[in-house]
Amino acid sequence: MKLLVILFTFFLSSNVSWLGDFNDAKTQANTTHKLILVCFSGSDWCGPCIRERKEILESAAFESFAAEHLILVRADFPREKKNQLSKEQTKLNEALADKYNPDGKFPYTLLIDTNGKVLKDWDGFPNESPENFVVQIATFIHATN
Figure (cartoon, rainbow, N blue to C red):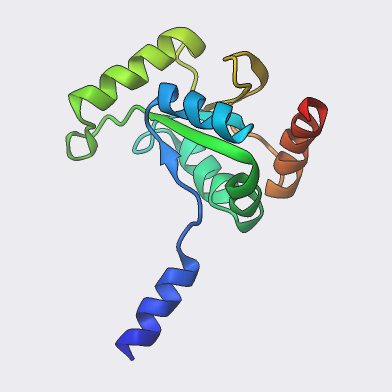
């Protein structure tokens, strides 16, 4: 029974990983010729951020697409003490926000090319299905290839 639970958990687990360092993401994006998706989030206080993560970013449609086509970066700004990030991660997130989200919008999602140019942004909750969200990103991928 334990083996079944472990296997079931393995198959349900996400096949994408979110980076915390934008410079690492740019390096990977250059090496793999992928675009970067950055998500500014308040994971423990921002309702629309939580909804975006659950309904879109953790959907099977998005995850399967992202695994093949995107480098993902999460810049999280939690407020609860129990969810606080390391000082190093907080500095990375703040530096990224200074450059790409100086107004402090949440959620704020950006599609960025390997040179750091913003190709598309979603200000607030993307009010669409995960499939339509993926289609919007795919148009930029096909345009850059």
